[in-house]
Image 1: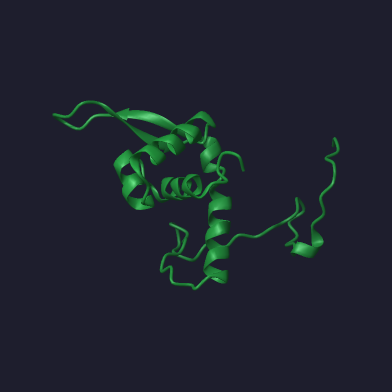
Image 2: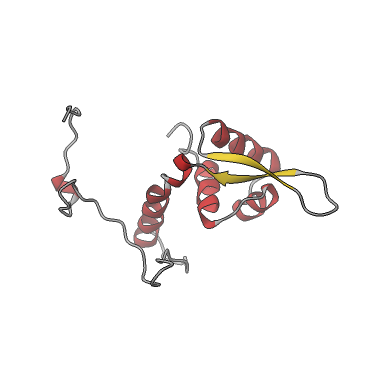
Length: 132
């Protein structure tokens, strides 16, 4: 939460999952001041969720773009979960949806145990992990 708990950081991660890679695009799509975007991109990079990767367009100096790392990709269910929660519990004006690229069906998150049982919130408990 210390890394992605702020609104700008979470919006940057959302945009990274949407495929945004360039600094100016993050600024425009998230609606942040450049200094704020730079601060959050640096923190997300330092935390290992995104990585800087050089690119060069012909006739222009080399610049960096931002790509998701394995840790950043692993955050995808959280991003989708927040998106689903917002679609269900807010005004519902968002016309976007997550869909499976292979078949086109909408994506839905589920909570399952290791045995494959679907779980409701009242069926989950928190406990100390044990060695197996």
